[in-house]
View (cartoon, rainbow, N blue to C red):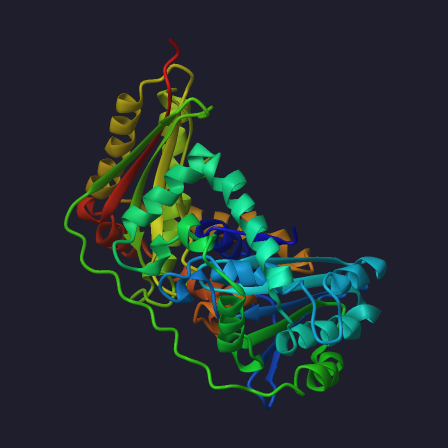
Length: 449
């Protein structure tokens, strides 16, 4: 199936990595996009890349799983699947057939904060993509004949990706435990008991509530200019009527009072692991440069040159892998996660103690100016070639704009990273690394009899 569920972590990790795609000496210039807004409120971003005569055509909707009605978990992802089921003028699957016949590629994705659809085609097929994508934005046709069988598809997707995967099961439970009240604690694919009750009426209601040009962003990157894109966007998307959009009403996350622990043991586990997850802010809700400081911290602690790998894998030799994860591209909060996996036969209790020792060292001893400067440079150097990919800019801007950022925020990223100091890094670390705001996840294999 073309629709692919992606967890918040996966979706935002891609965006965060791609935001690092400019040399540090550029002044507020990363992708140098051209932008305009149609009369109906649809935002358009165009990024020229003339390395090959191809274009990436993407439509991002400012709605995801965290915007679902209570009791209807999974409806955002379900609708993503159903968007391929035909319109008033096209039969189910016909758009996909047209894309394939024209040598293109397509996909779709759902996260907590957005839903996106894209096609990569030769430049001369861009108008065809716009025509049919605009058509399904306004003219989707759904009946029980296509909706109910597709419900079985998403249920099977859940079974294969979560119910039969101990790592995914643990991740689902960790998220549900980390977020006490916020909808990020509900899996994007949905809870099975609620997924089984989703129907045609639910899908149409969600479609009519959120799928409108004034709640969408058109991003075109590749061998085009805004001058070429504007008349096509105006012809196809500009002809659609705007509709009143509801606010994205999200409940806040309350104060957390106690650390929590989630453990899962299964014979299906091939590689045990431990994660320590802390509630953290994303770009939109962070104060000052906190999110940028946490990105620098993640580079200092993680990766093949980071403290965790160097100390626990190379020096002590007790871990097969170790690192941390943070991505601030979310509409609300996110998580900062430390993780570690043992060498064969390693003791998990000793491993967890060693990981916590490194976290304690960070808080007690801090980071050096040299570490910070090196991390900032590595962040830039590691992704400098990402600018060459046609779809890179579209991915970055889509995730940023649906999460409440602006084009200017993306373009100014190198400058904001450059301003981070060691004091900023430690202030951010001490703000989020709090035992009471943490969840420890333990994935273990059953001992052999």
